[in-house]
Image 1 (cartoon, rainbow, N blue to C red):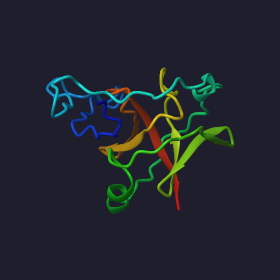
Image 2: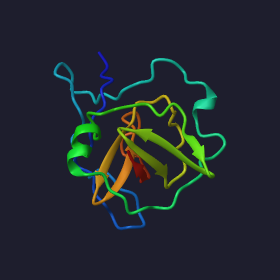
Image 3: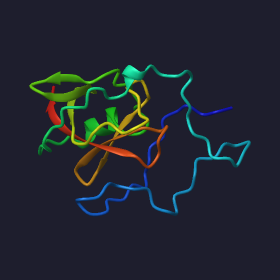
Length: 148
């Protein structure tokens, strides 16, 4: 039986300011109790082409807003998955809203990701990343634009 739960990536490493975070080589794969094969969530049905970023996202500039730790633990991280369903666009900048926070995109939407995929927000050294369990090791840099 395939697992479809979102899983946090606790072993993220920040490798310099110009590069993307990566999982370390020693991170062990998620294993089921009955099998030693790595389990990766799968899409239940083919997603329509419109769910991928077309046209391209209006990218934001990284801000200096942060999410208070108590709020982050309550609403974000690998145990708090959600779907974007399609970013909103305001003043030429693409954004999405989750958990009382509005985020902007700092990087283009990754190939193979869909707006209907379950994703979660992870934090690392004051930077925020959108993570997709269907694509472990690929992280989309995002920034906090405002909080409610």
